[in-house]
Image (tube, rainbow, N blue to C red; front, top):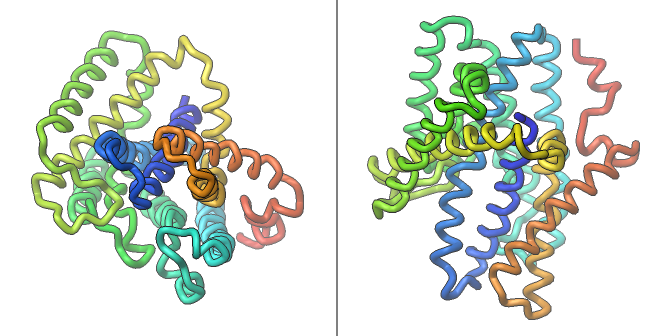
Length: 337
């Protein structure tokens, strides 16, 4: 189920980036309200859900006996992929600068402390992995409460803040990763087609509708919001928490009845798909716009074909020529003791 949920979150990321690109291009016209609402929902849910699932995986891996050598190797691999994809994404964006909403220069590419676009997620994963694996908050209640409190403070302070440097980006998500490591195992055991899951999913859905339709500003977790207030931050955090729980619980309820093999496959390759999708999503939108396609719904749906192209890239990157783009070469990995 976790792979399928991760696949669903990655689909949300791809659709969210396609939708954001259309919003930033200024071609939404009269349909802008729908797409702005879609933007709020997707950006409130997809990365918090990924962070929550990431936290679950950390606790599961250490309960299964992961040692410090594997931890260090995994962290190094995250930074390796960050450097590799900074080069790939940088060259790609420079070559396509005249078609981009925000052109990129070589100075921005070589400054690895300032991530390009979505690549901030890799150092965030490495730092969060190291912190949670070191603290291991799932061991006892006292450690769990202190870690949740500390991560909650960070989430509150950095909600709606898109830091300039990689170590300041994504800090709003840390509470969700810690929450996944502490509560994920319990939620998985209690979820499914039962009265408790259905009742809590219904309650969480009502809370989300109340927050969304009460007309207050909702600050998004990872996008800069210069006009944020304490109320907009609180609304954003609550909407993300309850919305993520709605998705998790409803998915667990229907998972036993429906085959999600495709989503499971997407979730299994979620990281390389996440890294590669911006090589394909923007060109599809630009190409369709150039040939005169003006239907916004068609543009959003067609842009998500980047997900299919990203999956094909991952499939073909298994050969030796491209394998270094999705995993650290074995000689390098074996050097880490």
